[in-house]
Length: 548
Image (tube, rainbow, N blue to C red):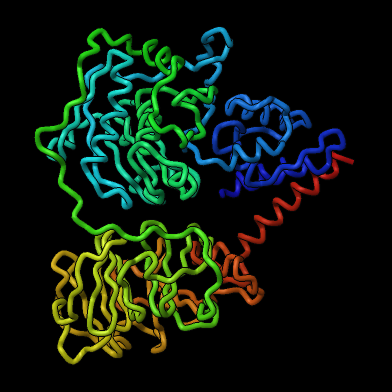
């Protein structure tokens, strides 16, 4: 959360606390939810935040999710905020533009503002999800989703193969957390998002599915629903609607309802959906046209299916302690910092601990219990375990290689460290290091002595990873950070503790937010952080005085 957003939320929460006439039970994550989905403008001034402000915003949300507009955070409203949903915003700054009426109920629908300049569109299924490996089933479900919109409008869709993918109109892909250059990272509860057509925009018209979830072809049974299995066709129909320019609608039977209706075995467009699409692209004047598979399918996915990672687990009696144990390996992968101790793994994102430590093999199937080092090479993870290297791509084991395959001499039986630095890959044994070519994965150049090249590096360091702010070496609770432009004889520019002295609770963040995101101050003393906290402290005091 940005400092600007933190300040806005602080002021809003204080308004709630000090208003006698406005008693409302609302949590900070619910405030963040309303802001994320367009109900709160981040540019609001303090004068605009009145006791009636929240009632209005909650009514707007209740209206969008088809709930009674009480203006209060009642149980049904809280439940709606926790439901699986689309990651696209509900409201936009120009929402006053498009209100129409539909049917006898007088329900509104929002007419699309953005539309494709043509009616014959192509699409490309870039990859398949981790939990549904049947490519034909994927093509069938997504093809049926496109066909539903085609049957109701003047649009036609044609699937193209990967060979033609560079010229495709709509690219559909299954993504994980922070992905590519997408401005919207996935988090739990958000199943997919899509982008409207905008000329010259990188993701224009594209659809991204959250690969954290288990997607299934229709129908989805009640037992599937209880296990969190998601109806791929229904979600695809919804997101394709966004790609075509359609916003969220506030009627539950609409496929464009923002909260996913997973119990729909055979999803279909409602009369409201048909009216919206026809108001933009016209009716279908040739109902007989059908969906066509490409003559040449995209490349199949050949890797075996990895296991589903549980979101919750009980404490393991052998679980090590992060702040006092020797860290065996660490790596940045897809926007997350992974830390390995014995056969356990910790996951951090945006300086926050995700869930509980899990057994590493529950995410990386067939991974050995002893891990000496790990490095990310071209989005592949190379795990070093004794004399072997386990190569994973997208959490799937691709191959197992001996150390000698990398060009390491036979007498090296174990790698101590492996990391990337300035686009180079380094492999450490006890006293020497070598550089690995990222393309051939072969040793290049001569061996070098660690203590001559890495000035001041303690012999005891057991893990290393590269972050945006430098190269970090770990030894128990200590972090040694290096910075250099050319990678030659880098000096230590900072050292600090991984965990704070007051870190005791296992669900807390084990290091301050600035430790892994800044180099200008230490863990215990950070003037800029202190100044920021003092600034918002003054805001809170001023707001409280306003309430007296």
